[in-house]
Length: 293
Image (cartoon, rainbow, N blue to C red; front, side, top):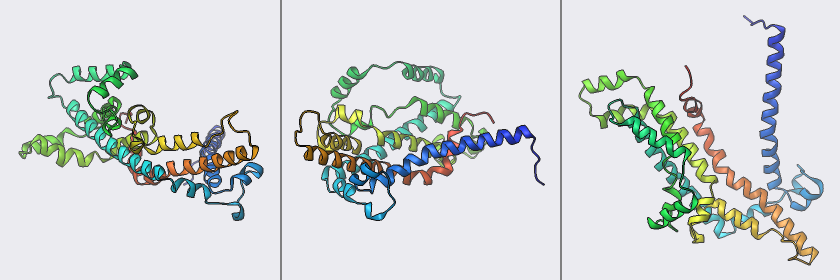
């Protein structure tokens, strides 16, 4: 039976539909533009704009980037840093969140208070740099992975999720003689896939797009992640005012910079676009942790 809507309801639904359509267009149009522009000849793109004529397309930008050994090495470094950071931060968040969700933990409110204080107060860049240096992590992969591994917000999300798991399951396991370790790995973790995958996705994306920590702590170019390599490539191919007198050379440099820019954006975004469909089924349930039922 069809639902009859009032005039106001129809107006509201139409307004929501228009808003959602605009939101989709705001996301999709720039994405399509960047993808198409990455395959186009920069000369045609600058003179005519987007063209769907295959004769105006070129793979020169991708060839230029992928032929750079630093680019391939940076891609591998970024995958390793992001995966390792996601593993460490999810492990810490899940373990801490589960412990804080248990009423048996003595002093859990004190620990939670101390964690929350760090969300509002930090030591700053210079003390953090000195700490990393004194710990011997400077110019090592650990300087990128360890400092930000403890995320208080992720711990709070994990604790909230674990509090939502029925206590009867753990009580039944206790009656059967299961230890805390067995309960955690055999019951709690299998039920925690939504929050684990969401936290892993957040951590992976955040680390994948990060470049500041690597720029501060990593001096060896062989350790630089993809974002830092792309930054170096784009800076090297920008024309500095007053340094190039030859107009042809300046035009070629501008063409090269334009060609690399869009290809670099697509390459750096590709892993995230590939990952999201596999995490989507867990994403909605995981991000709703703590909401009212």
